[in-house]
Image (cartoon, rainbow, N blue to C red; front, side, top):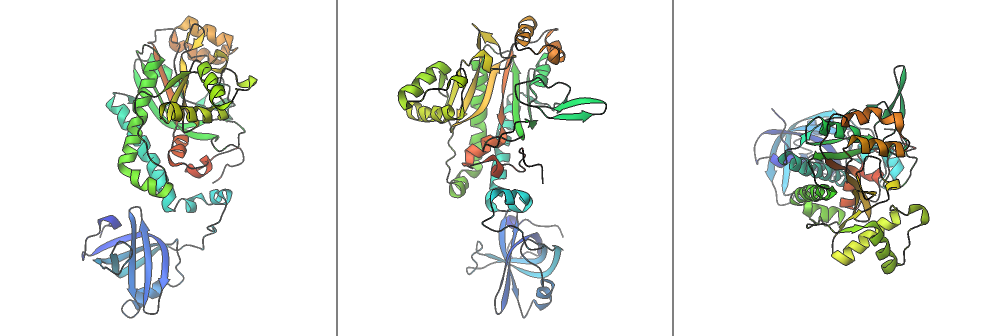
Length: 429
């Protein structure tokens, strides 16, 4: 007999169910076992007179154990678990658990030590299902737009992609590095003639940061596409991508997200507000008395991002805002420039930067000059080869999947949002 999911049970039909024991309640005449699978809960009711032999098998079995029951589901107005109960004729203990080391009041670091147990909660299961649906919505949109999904290497030979620190690893008789992003290989794909590509994959940043939104390994949703006229085409694409992802989440989980996380899934309208960095500085100072610190001029910081969100809500009634015209000293060498201004943007959502995107420089001579200006030289020789033999104009961006989910559900930290968190002080489980 095949296993039946709890949501698919049919009244009075002989069937087999299995899942985790959520709790056991022992009364004078009955023993009640609450069983949970990925689709919900059901109460399994054992009469102490009728099911004495089954109850004996449950001695020393506690919550957290995995169990299998054979029997029938019946409807009952007296059962709180959805008006259904399961009457068993057989049972098998598939895995007997020890007492959980996690208390309800355990702090986040203790919970992370036993993350596989922590993830069993309804809230955490919902969180991961929402993230999966968000990615599905964005991925499906790109497939419909004729994008090709690729898979780029995470072991690379140079460490010069950006200013972020990289992880060095021993690669046989030489050094290698964990990729900070697939940026170089995305552009190689464009030079190969693929035209529209994306990837959902891990990226690594050796930053000794202990903020709520930084991690040393994260999942990045990257895309790149060719034959664009300006970076505004890239912004247009990102608007549609985000709308597609959030729309699917709202359709599938909007009500329960509101109930469990007290967050509304808001589908943004197009176009998202857009503002130049220098104009934003003026608005933040005029409206909130905030002046960007000298060392951040030409860029944003966390406080400015928060205020930019406040400004977008007050001025446009919009949760998103694009910021453009950053200083060339604050942007990557491969961003195209016009009048010496990088042709790119940051996208802020709910007070946090979720994307840096741009039109890329595809002309070899100009790209090499910008490379030399940044002092990269030999480190990017292999990358420059991609542009020697013809490459169409193109652009793209990346979104951190975990950060996006954190903001969507109002979770305070990536530690709580990620399936498994990696930080400067955490390499297990």
